[in-house]
Length: 314
Image 1: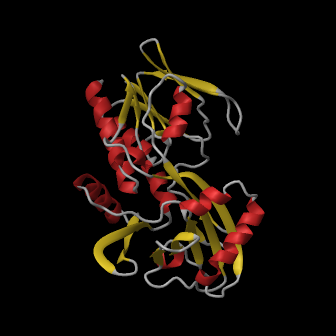
Image 2: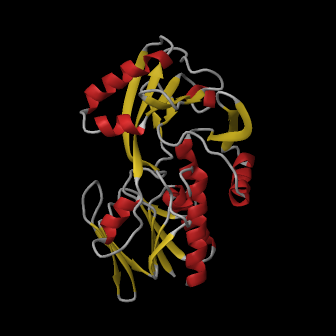
Image 3: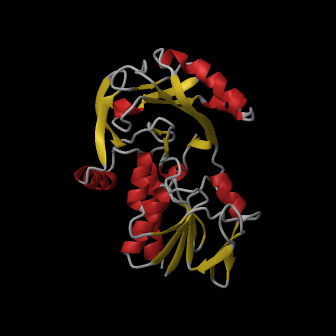
């Protein structure tokens, strides 16, 4: 059977790999230039590497445990720590070369097309059709097949499906991500990450060198949802300057060599849906961390579940 997966993040790639293994003809398309979605890593001007989206992942389920054990054996991931301010015994894993490398690893043996901006998904002739216009460095085109999986944030999925198609009402929190290359050590305490609950600006501060992702000093900071919402429309240069001033206590007095701002409009689903995927209509499904839970593991489990549903249905 021919299946289209929209989105090359963890959920989409997991679904695609499972469906390929079952013998289906699978194509993955994504509007981004690189696979990964929020598993994103940036290289800064001094050669520093920094995760700008997902920072680490934990393991709770037997299905994800099996996958992570294989990644550990391959040297793709490593254990970072077992807690931040205090140890709780639960391993936090990171990808050795940055989270984006995990996405690249998952594209092996999968037909993945990046820079494809799908604009319409509709039922046609007993199957499903997706279309996309020319532009963004690519050519226009269409796909027609038996089933489609949309792993984009639910509001974006709803826009693709158009009016009259019911989808869950999922609310997301936004985040502004600031990555900073430094000429010396940061002030982030061991083990190199802090999850903040009462800071007026920041919800997360992480040291990418301490994580083992970067050979040189680089810090990632995520704002609270409130800061992201209130300052979302500000121009980039002024907003970056303001965020750098707010980040100063975490930079340890080291000089800033490079700084990049990224806006994650759909960073975290506030209340995930009750099931691991949503069937829009026969042959069309929504999946992602809005269904599996707001974690890398949740996206993995959602992708796995929707693939198993499609395989059994077809």
